[in-house]
Length: 245
Image (cartoon, rainbow, N blue to C red; front, side):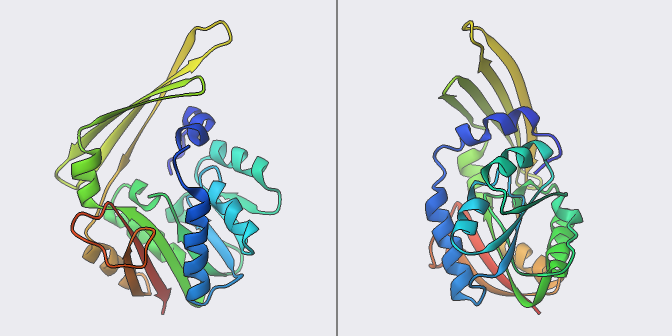
């Protein structure tokens, strides 16, 4: 995530009302348990407002939530005092000690602005892990960026917040420049306007795997998101699982 996200943090949970957090917590919990990190200490890189982090804590994992946005973490900290929340950029991650697993969810990896930034994030993840520790993350695919997000506009009207989400697709790096216009309803019925802008990029599966291998990982599995099946050329999201060598 970026360093700002002030106004966006205020409405993030409202605008992600359709994210199936309980199902995602079950999915990540099954991955961690199935591949040897049952009940492990887990770092959640780019945790946002902590909705998934908290649910994994409730499922028995010793969670650390990390995000670059202090505004996001303020909201996260109100959800649980049991979790250690740390404010850091993903590509500058440092921990005291190591963990059994690292996760990064809800396309946080896509928010890193370049392959070099992703490589540094992966290296930092490896440094945080015990030998043989797991790294599991999901990413939006090039297909999703080109065909679903593309140059499209989406509008949300939820509980006093009106959001206009405009995308601009960049063929050069399969990136999407995202502009959010936010309108907040005041008590007198008027609206205050705010906004956020950020960028996501998408790489090929082979590129992610090469970056992982160059960071000290052995790639284990690449699945269609929220499944344990092989992805297709029209997959919108992937789950990639790697193990520290």
